Length: 157
Length: 144
Image (cartoon, rainbow over all chains, first blue to last red; front, top):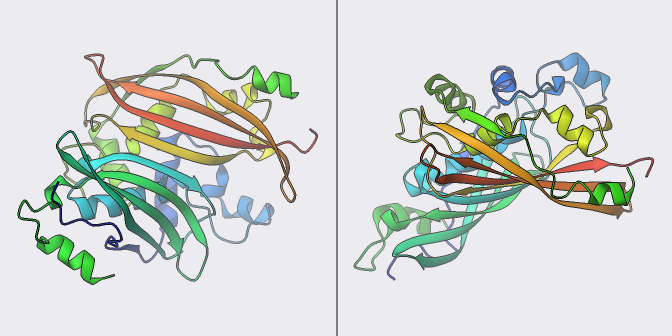
Protein backbone atom coordinates (compact mmCIF):
# COMPACT_ATOMS: atom_id res chain seq x y z
CA UNK A 1 0.00 0.00 0.00
CA UNK A 2 1.38 3.40 -0.90
CA UNK A 3 -0.21 6.53 0.40
CA UNK A 4 0.65 10.11 1.12
CA UNK A 5 -1.48 10.07 4.27
CA UNK A 6 0.56 9.14 7.32
CA UNK A 7 -0.07 8.49 10.99
CA UNK A 8 0.33 11.75 12.85
CA UNK A 9 -0.84 13.94 9.98
CA UNK A 10 -3.10 16.74 11.20
CA UNK A 11 -6.21 17.43 9.17
CA UNK A 12 -6.84 21.01 8.05
CA UNK A 13 -8.99 22.62 10.73
CA UNK A 14 -12.63 23.47 9.94
CA UNK A 15 -13.54 26.81 11.43
CA UNK A 16 -16.97 28.32 12.15
CA UNK A 17 -16.49 31.79 13.62
CA UNK A 18 -20.06 32.21 14.83
CA UNK A 19 -22.70 29.55 15.50
CA UNK A 20 -26.01 30.90 14.22
CA UNK A 21 -28.97 31.10 16.60
CA UNK A 22 -31.38 31.32 13.66
CA UNK A 23 -30.17 28.07 12.08
CA UNK A 24 -31.02 26.20 15.29
CA UNK A 25 -34.66 27.14 14.64
CA UNK A 26 -34.49 25.65 11.14
CA UNK A 27 -32.99 22.38 12.37
CA UNK A 28 -35.47 21.81 15.21
CA UNK A 29 -38.40 20.74 12.97
CA UNK A 30 -36.09 18.76 10.67
CA UNK A 31 -34.99 16.72 13.71
CA UNK A 32 -38.51 16.80 15.23
CA UNK A 33 -36.74 17.97 18.37
CA UNK A 34 -39.21 19.85 20.57
CA UNK A 35 -36.67 20.93 23.18
CA UNK A 36 -37.00 24.75 23.49
CA UNK A 37 -33.42 25.20 24.74
CA UNK A 38 -32.51 25.37 21.05
CA UNK A 39 -34.60 28.48 20.30
CA UNK A 40 -36.30 29.99 23.35
CA UNK A 41 -33.86 32.06 25.40
CA UNK A 42 -36.48 32.57 28.12
CA UNK A 43 -36.51 28.80 28.71
CA UNK A 44 -32.71 28.66 28.68
CA UNK A 45 -32.60 31.47 31.24
CA UNK A 46 -35.27 29.80 33.37
CA UNK A 47 -33.20 26.61 33.49
CA UNK A 48 -30.20 28.57 34.72
CA UNK A 49 -28.29 27.76 31.53
CA UNK A 50 -27.37 31.31 30.61
CA UNK A 51 -28.57 33.73 27.99
CA UNK A 52 -27.85 31.87 24.73
CA UNK A 53 -29.62 28.95 23.00
CA UNK A 54 -27.90 25.55 22.95
CA UNK A 55 -26.80 24.22 19.56
CA UNK A 56 -28.22 20.84 18.59
CA UNK A 57 -25.71 18.01 19.12
CA UNK A 58 -26.16 16.70 15.56
CA UNK A 59 -24.94 20.06 14.21
CA UNK A 60 -21.77 19.69 16.26
CA UNK A 61 -21.28 16.25 14.73
CA UNK A 62 -21.93 17.62 11.23
CA UNK A 63 -19.14 20.20 11.65
CA UNK A 64 -16.71 17.30 12.14
CA UNK A 65 -18.18 15.56 9.07
CA UNK A 66 -17.57 18.76 7.09
CA UNK A 67 -13.93 18.82 8.19
CA UNK A 68 -13.48 15.20 7.10
CA UNK A 69 -15.14 15.89 3.72
CA UNK A 70 -13.03 18.98 3.06
CA UNK A 71 -9.88 16.95 3.72
CA UNK A 72 -10.77 13.72 1.93
CA UNK A 73 -12.58 15.15 -1.09
CA UNK A 74 -16.25 14.76 -0.27
CA UNK A 75 -18.89 13.51 2.13
CA UNK A 76 -19.05 10.22 0.23
CA UNK A 77 -15.62 9.30 1.66
CA UNK A 78 -16.88 8.84 5.22
CA UNK A 79 -17.00 5.19 6.30
CA UNK A 80 -17.63 5.48 10.03
CA UNK A 81 -17.89 8.17 12.69
CA UNK A 82 -18.24 7.53 16.39
CA UNK A 83 -18.62 10.50 18.72
CA UNK A 84 -19.19 11.24 22.38
CA UNK A 85 -21.01 14.43 23.23
CA UNK A 86 -18.90 16.07 25.92
CA UNK A 87 -20.30 19.58 26.25
CA UNK A 88 -22.59 22.24 24.86
CA UNK A 89 -22.04 24.67 22.02
CA UNK A 90 -24.01 27.89 22.42
CA UNK A 91 -25.33 30.43 19.98
CA UNK A 92 -22.62 32.87 18.81
CA UNK A 93 -19.81 30.49 19.90
CA UNK A 94 -16.71 30.18 17.72
CA UNK A 95 -15.98 26.49 17.10
CA UNK A 96 -13.16 24.59 15.41
CA UNK A 97 -13.14 20.96 14.27
CA UNK A 98 -9.77 19.21 14.44
CA UNK A 99 -8.40 15.81 13.60
CA UNK A 100 -5.24 13.74 13.49
CA UNK A 101 -4.56 10.50 11.62
CA UNK A 102 -4.08 7.60 14.05
CA UNK A 103 -3.94 4.68 11.59
CA UNK A 104 -3.83 3.97 7.86
CA UNK A 105 -4.76 0.61 6.37
CA UNK A 106 -5.80 -1.14 3.19
CA UNK A 107 -9.38 -2.36 2.95
CA UNK A 108 -10.15 -4.27 -0.22
CA UNK A 109 -7.84 -2.17 -2.31
CA UNK A 110 -8.99 1.12 -0.77
CA UNK A 111 -6.90 3.19 1.62
CA UNK A 112 -8.74 3.98 4.83
CA UNK A 113 -7.48 6.38 7.49
CA UNK A 114 -8.66 6.34 11.08
CA UNK A 115 -8.66 9.81 12.64
CA UNK A 116 -9.08 11.06 16.19
CA UNK A 117 -11.45 14.01 15.93
CA UNK A 118 -12.80 16.72 18.19
CA UNK A 119 -14.87 19.87 18.14
CA UNK A 120 -13.72 22.61 20.49
CA UNK A 121 -15.23 25.92 21.49
CA UNK A 122 -12.58 28.60 21.06
CA UNK A 123 -11.68 29.89 24.53
CA UNK A 124 -13.98 27.18 25.88
CA UNK A 125 -14.27 23.44 26.35
CA UNK A 126 -14.23 20.38 24.14
CA UNK A 127 -17.77 19.82 22.87
CA UNK A 128 -17.29 16.51 21.11
CA UNK A 129 -14.65 13.82 20.72
CA UNK A 130 -14.55 10.74 18.56
CA UNK A 131 -12.95 8.64 15.86
CA UNK A 132 -13.62 8.45 12.14
CA UNK A 133 -12.75 6.08 9.30
CA UNK A 134 -12.35 7.87 5.98
CA UNK A 135 -11.56 6.58 2.49
CA UNK A 136 -8.45 8.51 1.51
CA UNK A 137 -7.61 6.56 -1.61
CA UNK A 138 -7.84 9.73 -3.70
CA UNK A 139 -5.21 11.34 -1.48
CA UNK A 140 -2.87 8.46 -2.21
CA UNK A 141 0.04 8.77 -4.59
CA UNK A 142 1.01 5.58 -6.44
CA UNK A 143 4.58 6.82 -6.56
CA UNK A 144 4.61 7.12 -2.80
CA UNK A 145 5.43 10.82 -2.82
CA UNK A 146 3.22 13.32 -1.01
CA UNK A 147 0.42 14.82 -3.07
CA UNK A 148 -0.14 18.60 -2.92
CA UNK A 149 -3.10 18.13 -0.58
CA UNK A 150 -1.31 16.03 1.98
CA UNK A 151 1.91 18.03 1.67
CA UNK A 152 -0.04 20.93 3.06
CA UNK A 153 -1.37 18.72 5.83
CA UNK A 154 2.08 17.49 6.74
CA UNK A 155 3.57 20.96 6.78
CA UNK A 156 0.98 22.05 9.32
CA UNK A 157 2.22 19.56 11.90
CA UNK B 1 -37.27 1.80 36.96
CA UNK B 2 -35.70 -1.27 38.59
CA UNK B 3 -32.57 -2.88 37.18
CA UNK B 4 -34.69 -5.87 36.12
CA UNK B 5 -37.04 -3.57 34.20
CA UNK B 6 -34.04 -1.83 32.68
CA UNK B 7 -32.57 -5.11 31.50
CA UNK B 8 -35.88 -6.01 29.85
CA UNK B 9 -35.55 -3.01 27.52
CA UNK B 10 -32.78 -4.80 25.60
CA UNK B 11 -34.16 -6.62 22.59
CA UNK B 12 -37.25 -4.47 22.18
CA UNK B 13 -37.75 -3.45 18.58
CA UNK B 14 -38.87 -0.17 17.05
CA UNK B 15 -42.05 -0.09 14.95
CA UNK B 16 -39.93 1.13 12.05
CA UNK B 17 -40.99 3.09 9.03
CA UNK B 18 -39.58 5.05 6.13
CA UNK B 19 -37.61 8.20 5.58
CA UNK B 20 -37.13 10.08 2.31
CA UNK B 21 -34.14 12.38 1.87
CA UNK B 22 -36.03 15.25 0.28
CA UNK B 23 -33.85 17.52 -1.89
CA UNK B 24 -35.03 20.69 -0.16
CA UNK B 25 -34.30 19.21 3.27
CA UNK B 26 -30.79 18.23 2.15
CA UNK B 27 -30.31 21.85 1.03
CA UNK B 28 -31.59 23.17 4.35
CA UNK B 29 -29.47 20.80 6.42
CA UNK B 30 -26.35 21.77 4.48
CA UNK B 31 -27.19 25.42 5.03
CA UNK B 32 -27.77 24.85 8.75
CA UNK B 33 -24.45 23.05 9.30
CA UNK B 34 -22.45 25.26 6.90
CA UNK B 35 -21.68 22.46 4.44
CA UNK B 36 -21.07 22.90 0.72
CA UNK B 37 -24.13 22.56 -1.52
CA UNK B 38 -24.39 20.49 -4.68
CA UNK B 39 -22.78 17.17 -3.80
CA UNK B 40 -24.13 14.05 -5.53
CA UNK B 41 -24.82 12.36 -2.18
CA UNK B 42 -26.85 13.44 0.83
CA UNK B 43 -25.03 14.97 3.77
CA UNK B 44 -24.02 12.07 6.05
CA UNK B 45 -25.90 13.70 8.94
CA UNK B 46 -28.99 12.18 7.28
CA UNK B 47 -27.95 8.82 8.73
CA UNK B 48 -28.72 10.35 12.12
CA UNK B 49 -31.76 12.33 10.98
CA UNK B 50 -33.35 9.65 8.81
CA UNK B 51 -32.92 6.82 11.27
CA UNK B 52 -34.39 8.79 14.15
CA UNK B 53 -37.26 10.22 12.10
CA UNK B 54 -38.10 6.88 10.49
CA UNK B 55 -37.94 4.59 13.52
CA UNK B 56 -41.70 4.82 14.08
CA UNK B 57 -41.51 6.19 17.60
CA UNK B 58 -41.24 9.68 19.06
CA UNK B 59 -38.49 10.60 21.47
CA UNK B 60 -41.12 10.91 24.22
CA UNK B 61 -42.21 7.32 23.52
CA UNK B 62 -38.59 6.18 23.53
CA UNK B 63 -38.04 7.90 26.88
CA UNK B 64 -41.19 6.23 28.28
CA UNK B 65 -39.82 2.77 27.38
CA UNK B 66 -36.70 3.74 29.31
CA UNK B 67 -38.79 4.80 32.31
CA UNK B 68 -38.19 8.52 31.86
CA UNK B 69 -39.62 11.71 30.44
CA UNK B 70 -38.00 14.70 28.75
CA UNK B 71 -38.34 16.53 32.08
CA UNK B 72 -35.88 14.08 33.65
CA UNK B 73 -33.15 15.60 31.51
CA UNK B 74 -32.04 12.70 29.30
CA UNK B 75 -28.88 13.47 27.36
CA UNK B 76 -27.29 12.08 24.23
CA UNK B 77 -24.32 9.95 25.20
CA UNK B 78 -22.69 8.52 22.08
CA UNK B 79 -23.48 8.20 18.41
CA UNK B 80 -21.98 6.05 15.69
CA UNK B 81 -22.67 6.23 11.97
CA UNK B 82 -21.48 3.38 9.76
CA UNK B 83 -21.80 4.15 6.05
CA UNK B 84 -22.10 1.14 3.77
CA UNK B 85 -23.33 3.20 0.81
CA UNK B 86 -23.70 6.99 0.98
CA UNK B 87 -27.34 8.08 1.28
CA UNK B 88 -28.81 9.51 -1.90
CA UNK B 89 -30.94 12.62 -2.22
CA UNK B 90 -34.49 11.75 -3.27
CA UNK B 91 -34.18 8.11 -2.14
CA UNK B 92 -36.62 6.55 0.34
CA UNK B 93 -35.19 4.22 2.96
CA UNK B 94 -36.82 1.69 5.26
CA UNK B 95 -35.83 2.11 8.89
CA UNK B 96 -35.71 -0.69 11.47
CA UNK B 97 -33.94 -1.29 14.72
CA UNK B 98 -33.88 -2.39 18.34
CA UNK B 99 -32.51 -1.60 21.78
CA UNK B 100 -29.16 -3.32 22.23
CA UNK B 101 -27.85 -2.27 25.62
CA UNK B 102 -29.00 -0.95 28.99
CA UNK B 103 -26.69 -0.45 31.93
CA UNK B 104 -27.06 1.19 35.34
CA UNK B 105 -24.05 3.17 36.53
CA UNK B 106 -23.12 5.16 39.59
CA UNK B 107 -20.95 8.26 39.49
CA UNK B 108 -19.50 10.20 42.39
CA UNK B 109 -20.86 13.48 41.09
CA UNK B 110 -23.52 12.38 38.62
CA UNK B 111 -25.16 9.92 41.02
CA UNK B 112 -27.10 7.00 39.58
CA UNK B 113 -27.80 7.02 35.86
CA UNK B 114 -28.73 4.56 33.14
CA UNK B 115 -27.16 4.35 29.68
CA UNK B 116 -29.49 2.85 27.07
CA UNK B 117 -28.30 2.09 23.54
CA UNK B 118 -30.16 1.30 20.35
CA UNK B 119 -29.26 0.48 16.76
CA UNK B 120 -31.10 1.49 13.60
CA UNK B 121 -30.56 0.52 9.97
CA UNK B 122 -31.61 2.41 6.85
CA UNK B 123 -32.22 0.07 3.90
CA UNK B 124 -32.73 1.16 0.30
CA UNK B 125 -35.48 0.00 -2.08
CA UNK B 126 -33.35 -2.92 -3.28
CA UNK B 127 -33.10 -4.22 0.27
CA UNK B 128 -29.46 -3.27 0.71
CA UNK B 129 -28.44 -1.70 4.02
CA UNK B 130 -27.05 1.78 3.38
CA UNK B 131 -26.24 3.00 6.90
CA UNK B 132 -26.28 1.66 10.42
CA UNK B 133 -26.36 3.93 13.43
CA UNK B 134 -25.94 3.43 17.16
CA UNK B 135 -27.17 5.97 19.69
CA UNK B 136 -27.10 6.00 23.45
CA UNK B 137 -29.08 8.13 25.85
CA UNK B 138 -28.09 8.86 29.43
CA UNK B 139 -30.96 8.93 31.92
CA UNK B 140 -30.35 10.48 35.36
CA UNK B 141 -32.03 8.32 38.05
CA UNK B 142 -32.27 10.59 41.02
CA UNK B 143 -34.76 8.27 42.77
CA UNK B 144 -33.01 5.00 41.88
